[in-house]
Image (cartoon, rainbow, N blue to C red; front, side):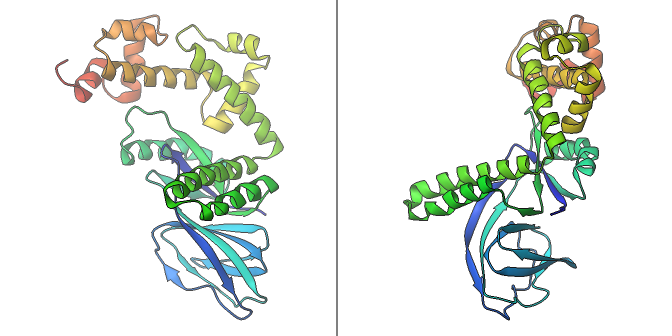
Length: 296
């Protein structure tokens, strides 16, 4: 099932709001509504459901799902041809999101969406990442299993039910995110994540493409291709971004001299650190510290 992609930036991870069941007799339509203010995940568990959003139409069959936008016009374009049952989950996010035609468009717009997210979600210093969820989907066996566990929480006391549902919902989104990947995407994801982990664990040391090749046993060109596909940057660009982000934490959370902070995050020369920081943040490390702290 070819699908558009809903691209979310986190944290925060999209969160569960409400859920339920609905049934339709043959000849019934889905209700006509607009701007419900939450994302609506619909999964057909029996029969088939004609569904439309802003002029686009789908026929959802058993085991298939659709995520409707919070700002869209949703309606049944034609009546059900058989008795149909669905489950629905409403969810929302506090952060930035967009709907794209495919993964390539998501990656092309990733930097712009991330910048918007940092402002919208007040995340000046937090590390962020992308979540890619298909708009339409055929649920895998594992995703169905998690969804079943999600709805089984109806029998739990309310004090525990929402906690468990939130956890299962986020696990369900994780499966949708991973199921979206093709075999080549999966290989790229695994290698890109290995590179990310290595950089996170060793960023204060000297890291080069040659060193990454020696540690991970992949050609630098292939590693760069995988990182660009998954994170939108090369390994060396990711390293620079990570060092800058770590230095921002230290600027705000410590009173260490800027020279020490530069050294702690892997820069060998203060002038190089200051230049890189100013180019990325639009102000010097000292000015950044003054902006976000007092009595410095």
